[in-house]
Amino acid sequence: MDEMVAAVDIGGTKIAGALVDRRGRLTAQCQRPTPAEADAESVLQVVTEVLDRLAEAPGWAGVRGVGIGSAGPVDVSKGAVSPVNIPAWRDFPLVDSVREHLGGDRLPVLLTGDGPAMTAAEHWQGAARGFRNALCMVVSTGVGGGLVLDGALYPGPSGNAGHIGHISVELDGDPCPCGSRGCVEVMAAGPAIARRALRQGWRPDASGDTSAGAVAEAARRGDPVALASFARAAQALAAGIAGTAALVELDVVVIGGGVAKSGELLFAPLRESLRGYATLPFVRDLELRPAQLGTDAGLVGAAAAAAQWLRLDGWF
Image (cartoon, rainbow, N blue to C red; front, side, top):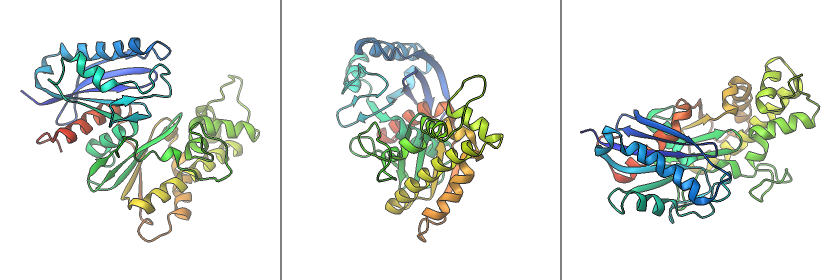
């Protein structure tokens, strides 16, 4: 029977699960809405329902471990999570709770943050495949990321390494929810793009849509304020990327998430800004790629991180 990893992807809107094989294929998929405003046990109950559905699938007999990718912050050393968008989970002992539900120590359970999970997925099956040193980023309502160093996922002691969204790139910039100022996230995430465009005079059409997607549509029509807002976001990303590359010597940067779906509206000014920031010889040739795995990245990455941790043969 094929070896499998049971993967769970926990976010603010959905909790998804799948069995993942050594080729990265998803089977027995299921999904439930996240009861984000419910109490802690109610959220956990949805996670266990997803796992119970997976356990009914024929491939469950081949499962060697459970990989959980969760919105953060996470603390993998304690197996705990504190997702910003799930208020009832603060330092919640997710790994112990899942392990207990599954019957103790019968199956190992590994927790990974959503940024490192996306990174593991893109390195295993996506745009960073074949590269030994990579930064993979999600640019959406927030900015997250993860690192591959010397060919392996590097989550760091707490599981939050590579969190590029909270590198400060503007000393006197706007306050960030993390408590710092001028972070990449507060300048380049979707809400920041929309907020800046509105502040500088852009106005939505008759629909009243003030999202970053609406700003992107205006930019495609040539609106100078919308274009300038994307360019400013790209500059912030470039500064953070170049600083990270100078620290750890990257080969490739992979960018996914809702803002990245704007395509060249983001990538063209990003490449231009990166030429101005990545000037040292060992960062000058840094390759920039769009992510490939889309919404499957969380599940594929949770499985990949668990398989790496378990040292499963033939997975990489």
